[in-house]
Length: 341
Ligand code: NAD
Ligand code: MG
Ligand code: MG
Ligand code: MG
Ligand code: MG
Image 1 (tube, rainbow, N blue to C red):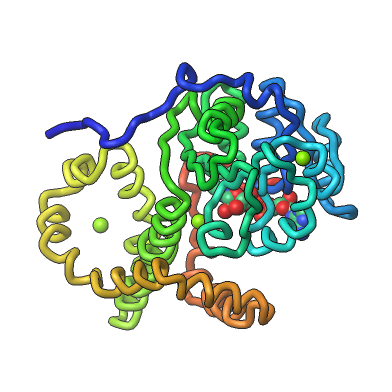
Image 2 (cartoon, rainbow, N blue to C red):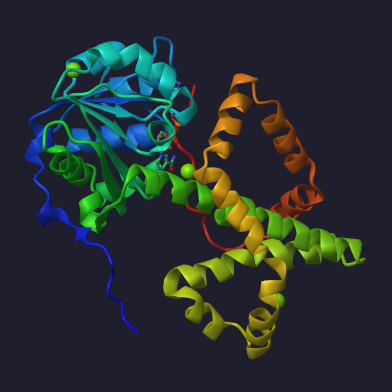
């Protein structure tokens, strides 16, 4: 067994924060990632200006935290590095509004590669195009930084006009705390395709579907919805915690031998590998992204329908009731981002 990694990990000593402390950085958006990046940069001594629309409810928040707020076009024009932290679906429109403020030698930076990789934003020549993506929700990016720690992150370079694009990305990663935990280099293509695959096939789509169908199978066979909820949803957290701490073996070592034998011999039955490969193919050939762009242009009709069906599923009603009756004894970690507009 080896624990050698196939990729280099960058830490604080590999990055020079003066690259970004010499810049003015425009952080566009003040949501989950935006507030965390802006505040961490500010505390690291970077000259930050937050770009928000007039009337955005986040403006007061940002100002109350001591940050300078301007409209996105003005912020971008003043800045040497423009960081796109508005929702992925509105980034192309925001780019239209700010692109004239990008001069040769400036950097356009993302935290997710969707719009660049699928050609929804085609940046001009002469600017560096990079990514710095914490592998964590924004509130943890902020909270860990405050404690002198950090969250792991990714960097990538799509366009290197200055020859310094990677150095700049590492410097930014240091200023928001990511190199305290470790940063690895990827490409826009790899980041987007693996991110979409993970959330669709495993983390968000795969897991919820498995939980729902497991619940339905038990309930349809006459078992009580409460028992089905505990077995198929509530216990999931305990299993995931063990996997997170020590991989599959830690989990298998902690459950009973019966659970281990049953799981090892039966798990395969529920997974559809061909379905996963189809999901990956539709990500790679752009079919998923095309569908999502059209869905947005049409006002999200299917998205709303799917959400409604999810909300009305029996597991939601049973779960809400049970979570109220039982105290699971530990304070849930706060997970909300600051209020959006
Ligand atoms: P968010 O939805 O939490 O926040 C979006 C912000 O943009 C809000 O402050 C909103 O007021 C502002 N905004 C919305 N429309 C705007 C407009 N037209 N003009 C100006 N501002 C506007 O977004 P987020 O989850 O922080 O995502 C930002 C980027 O970070 C995305 O590319 C996302 O993929 C990436 N990312 C997110 C996470 C995460 O955990 N949330 C993790 C890694 C990367
Ligand atoms: Mg500029
Ligand atoms: Mg992801
Ligand atoms: Mg994602
Ligand atoms: Mg059990």
